[in-house]
Image 1 (cartoon, rainbow, N blue to C red):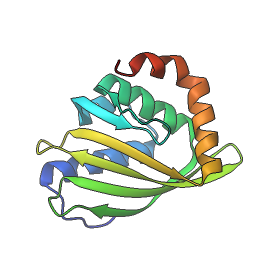
Image 2: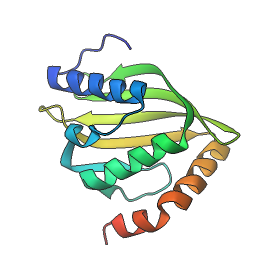
Image 3: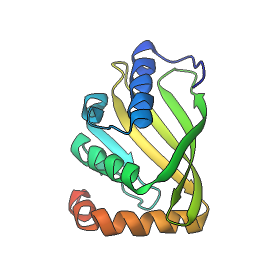
Image 4: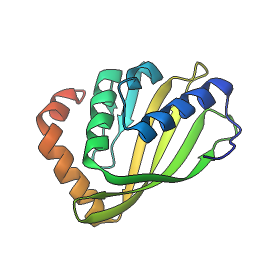
Amino acid sequence: MSDLNLHPNAAESLKRWHEMIRTGNLKALSELLDPDAVFRSPMAHTPYPGAQVVTMILNTVFDVFEDFKYHRELATADGLSVVLEFSAKVGAKELKGIDMIRFDERGKIVEFEVMVRPLSGLQALGDEMGRKLGAYLASAKPR
């Protein structure tokens, strides 16, 4: 998308992430994730831990979103984190959001946090994700 001043391994992982999104194939996602990666949902206070859970969530979100598109990218000064602005639809609801992705020096994703607006879009996303993953996510939460 743009020229960011990223750590070389983070840059390579981000390139692979964009390729997965472009092709609609997230099969290699687990290769980008640290085993202890966490997902921070816009609907839940407590993060979801573990690469398997993060993979399940991101694959499901990718199926729920329609007309998904990234617009802008920003990077932190240390070159290990990016913010990706996106737009998408969930049913008839349009939404905008950001993916905040933190990499380690190996280029593995250690944290993936999502924020979404407006509230109506967030509610539509939460309803659809709950319908598809509610029981799974409840069991994935740390006790």
